[in-house]
Amino acid sequence: MRSVFLAAALFLSGCTHAYVIHGATGRAARDINARAAYQRATVTLLDGRRLETSGFHIRLDSATWSTPRPVSMGAPLSNVAEIRFFSRGEGGMEGLGLGLLGGALVGATLGYVYRDEDPSDNCCFYLPPREGVVLLAGFFGLVGGLAGFPVGAVKGSTVVYRVRLPR
Image 1: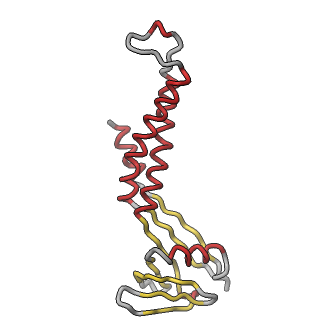
Image 2: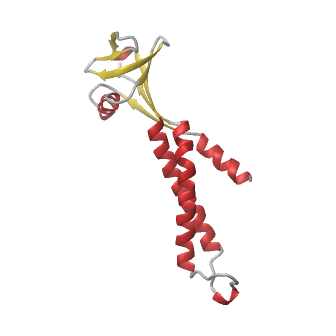
Image 3: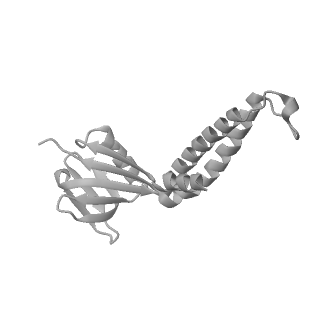
């Protein structure tokens, strides 16, 4: 029972990916513009204001966006502290992947530890050692993935870009 709570705690910790952008011409800036085309962003300005935005775009020396009230806004890029994106779909896929990996590792370990070297010891069925490892890894991986997907989708995935411009 403790292992169930430990697994739930690990999955509920969620995934946050943090990147630093040093200007409007790098890869991170291109990633922000591509992600903002289909996702809303939360922009934190240096004065502490947080704005829920859509249509965020980084230009050479500034950033522009729209707010829920159809108002276009902008600011010099040097006034933007961070840009944050949140996605339940990406969280679900990360949960699925982590669940598959964790479950498969547990299953492979159990299959290896409890493998049958001698078929005469079994009362019900016999699995050769290699097939037992593969079968249990596949089963536990499937169960882990099925458990990880909804948990990851509920928790979501957060991508944070911190703006650090050279002075």
